[in-house]
Length: 173
Image (cartoon, rainbow, N blue to C red; front, side, top):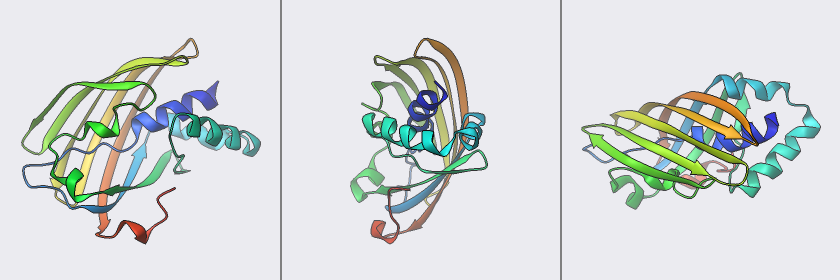
């Protein structure tokens, strides 16, 4: 049960991007997501981690490196993505999720998430601010039911631009 919860919510609580009045830099970004839920990963036996990775693949997600309650992932932002005001593509069609009420004021954004599939249903919000075209801070909250079990999850997100070339790092992290 914990494996399913972690796999589904990892994809939802990871990268939050929205673009400031000045476009963000395209290229490779490193995103660090911290949550109590991610802190449970250290208690998952190694044999079950493979099950977790397989489950994540079913949802079209890649499990990032998870250490000390934080997931570190890498995201490639194309020049076209960098020009968009609100990047709903990070959420649309992820685990049956859709984005509603996405708004942006200055360098900050907020959006509502609604998700529904056979094992996972829930609603949440994501918000954040680009402090510069090369850095971002944000948070998310999510009330859900995973395989019939109610679950609340929240996360804090920090992101930083690493460089202009996405091929510099293996993006499976």
